[in-house]
Length: 161
Image 1 (spheres, rainbow, N blue to C red):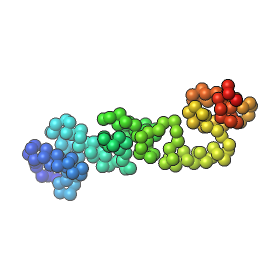
Image 2 (cartoon, rainbow, N blue to C red):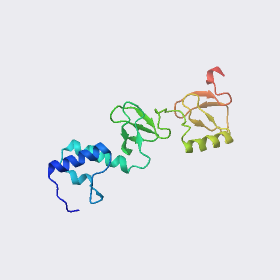
Image 3 (tube, one colour):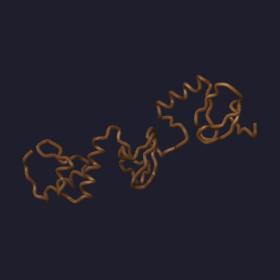
Image 4 (cartoon, rainbow, N blue to C red):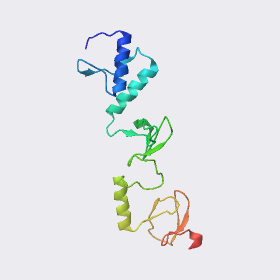
């Protein structure tokens, strides 16, 4: 729209938008981050972060209850989101504290792979839970991920089998 605002009124409007967690609107149109470029940089970054949060489908938040900050897509790598404020790691699937090296029950793709693994008789490494498929040869297995040596039949360490 063509409405003009003084810098103080514009700043107050954007502050109110941040407080209410809703975009600032004029003439039923949300104003973008570039509309507040004359404001302080920290303020622009905070508004930009809020707009990203509001536009992110299935937004993810820090699993640390004392923080609970929005985790923007840039901090989510694989199955884990790392909070920029408190460094807590959150599982992308269950939204709880990250549990690397274990399968998440909320991860539907992994559940499908686990069902296939069970059907095919695959085993998991006792050291890191990495899936192992034995096609031929002896029962002595060495995990390609963590180098754990184990028995394919009983999953005990190779030296104890």
